[in-house]
Image: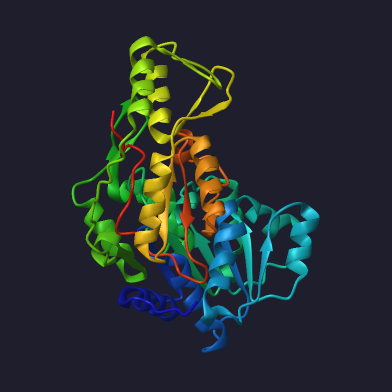
Length: 388
């Protein structure tokens, strides 16, 4: 894919190139990964300022996000990378590969610097989610600080540098500048910018910033920091909400009302029972979507009204991609079956680890034509678009 950066992305990439130490504080969605890789690519192949780069990030981000971004953009095609995750033997094999960029998860930083047996000869380090190094007593922080003097360039990336307060900034910026701006010791930092808050005699439980401390801290780190919010830079089209009414037939409506009234519905394929009001709400929502789980957990089809409506929306989109959300597992099965029957290409967006979305049994998949890039849809059909 051709990379056409926004002005703020070009500015941020240039900032990384111009500053050996840089803290890039970008909100989610502003593309900090592609920005950083663009700068790394230029430093490697244009200015030849660096020769071997280490990227440190959360496990999933290290394993998938950074490699995916490298493969995604045309201008990064010359970058050779190696992902240092997995078992000890797998990590050593990855370190033994010839590459420009080595990507490792933050949990293995101590292993890399102290136990791997490989020299820490990286002249540039990128710390993705710098906030995960906010604890100056953590092993990963201490391990990275030991080798920090060997690093010629360092970049810290995060969207929330001080989620728990200004105290978090000490370790994060000490890792970047080795204590030049906020001090080498936590006590020095506390005395300069904080006063004891909650305490019991001589035991201090928490600190609060002194008047003007926030501005003073920001002024100290301003020469190596840029901060951007998505609301200031992302240009999104105006959201247009369109409601598509789906009407049940008389027979389908009667079944709906019967379950609502009696809490029991007898159907040829099985019986549906709602034990209480909460269960009834779930059963009615399923029926409105087109199918319901029976008492023996089998799926009983009720209607195809919403599938028909979805098919109409896909046709009206005229080849443009759609993002469709589903609520129940049988929704996914029925939608997938319908689209396969109509030869409509689709791809499921898998979520590989627990998230808030999964905790409410919610996932999404994208319907798109082949060789088309995804764009946010201007219309959507909610699972709640039904008559009750």
